[in-house]
Image (cartoon, rainbow, N blue to C red; front, side, top):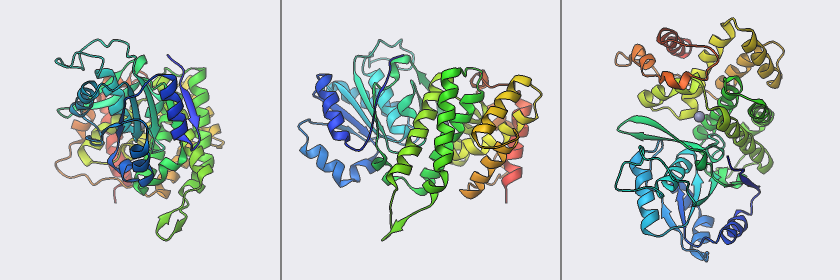
Length: 374
Ligand SMILES: [Zn+2]
């Protein structure tokens, strides 16, 4: 897999300029969330730039295939030669897929075509500290309510900017949920059966950075109704989320993520919120399993959480959920737990440290709704 060039700092315009010059690109497409275009500095940049950006904002969270396909069609039609993504996980995923689809035959289904290596360069700038999508070679798309994981080594963005100023527009719920997503990704990656020395080093860095900056990151500093961000703290959390992305880029995620998609869909929770609720039960389930290797892994994770016993890290994780007031949605008669358990993609559990069957999944879902409801 190619190495990424990561620029950490605020002078992203100059970095982009340099990349465009080096790659001899002149016609960039910008895929970004609509909120990004509300920032005056961004509008100024686009209107004053020597480059004419083709801007694409026509997508939703949990993005669908049609949006990525639409972006790819425009990319080709406008003869774009560079992909710039500025946004959360959805924007970056759309851009990654559009870039890949743009090298395909657009008269056919892009999800079944064998991809050619794309020569389109891509720069990703996350505006949330969470998904780590800028650091992975895969993306999630939905079509007809069905989730697809699009994955290819070539999908890893070649360039990344980590600029804490871009985090300013996050809502509080987004900030909470993204933080939890990053933390869960780092932990899941660590216990994944695909974990290796490199991925574990990334998980460790991610967890340390996220936890070390946790208190300051969430202590709001408000002036005239504007949230003032501490650049250094935000930069550290952004870097922590990026390392968590690098970790799952090697290992992918495990059961907490696999279980979360049903909850996101049924209850409309943010991704990281749903993952965190599942994480508590998945972690508890692993702590109760009798597996020597796993035991050592759980102890290592706990040490990185600055805890003594292997159970304490989960206690700490639960305290964070309480701190952030992450609620549990109320079950109604229409919400079928058995159905949730049956729709978990068992294939996605391949790298989970212990085998899980539908019955165990159902029990974990039951515990999620029992333990928090109220
Ligand atoms: Zn995630």
